Image 1 (spheres, rainbow over the protein chains, first blue to last red):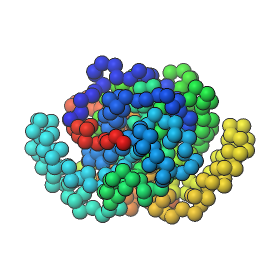
Image 2 (image 1 turned 90 degrees about the vertical axis):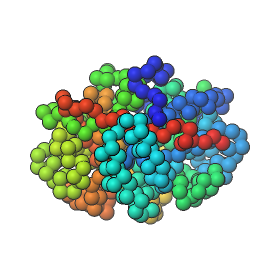
Image 3 (image 1 turned 180 degrees about the vertical axis):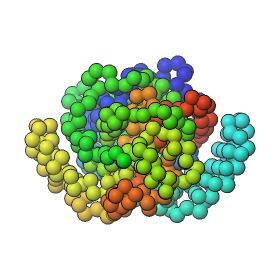
Image 4 (image 1 turned 120 degrees about the vertical axis):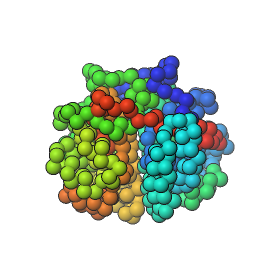
Length: 223
Length: 223
């Protein structure tokens, strides 16, 4: 069950939303001496998983790589272009969509009902309306849905990291065919969505050039 | 070019990151009397588009529906389950991945070079290394990449909306085959990723039951 909320004590060292969201930019050279404690990493993951997901399937999985042995494995299937981040980041967080998340669905909703968080009617609606959509879905739909869920949680993870005083770099440049098997995950079940380098900027890092965006007028229309 | 930053004057009415991110939950009954000014909607879109994207392709498109005529069109392809949100939200924001975003790529990077934001070497690296990957990509890859980009910007949009005092509900329940054509968009180019209802909760809205998450221990592993 979720244990964090907006009402508990201060959870972020940087709680300035404007700075967190609008100040985010990719960092490629991290301070190698920085270690992220596992309990803090887990906290960031937990905060990120407040993201919404289709039918609350939470079709995401985090693989956190922060050992020399783990990074050695990353170097076998990441593009050379991304070597600086892989080598210097405190951790590389690999995000996978879970195409079989729906199999845990009954247990999750039964628990919500037991905890009196939903009514019997809601429970039956979920089991009769939404669950069959997934149980009978094509693999393409399961891949697409879990990819969207995982990208949502990935965005929140990058922001949560900033809330904890870290910077990130989202990375898509690796061989997707090797992404799951390298970590002993079933590649039929787990589809790679992205990797995120996390850490503190190297003391001599000058920061990325702030990347250019299209004028906003080009990306919307009203109806 | 992007015109907002973390350093300018206050942009969010709610700037408490902990509240914005951890306090977000879906709202299904909105106050129908609330109108979101177009300039404020554009501001939220612009803030959201500070999200990262693969190779900075920004492969996203926003269609904002806030007229009775527009909502009538939505009702032709949205699941009945989502009728309350469609009918009561101040706006429905439809997010599409743009599978042809790479075609605008040369102009974007040339501009960055002209503005002296990147070096000639960086410009050539982009044109020789990344652009060909997209120019020769399969449609599946273009769909997958633009879907991830668009989910990232969607998550930021939901948080930006909270920063402006609004609530949201992300929606996947509609006929994807009709999503682009209903708005005169080329369905080969634009792939539907999600819709987001935006507005203020109805005065008598009791809020959604806070949705249950799996214990965090179930979603990660360390290597």
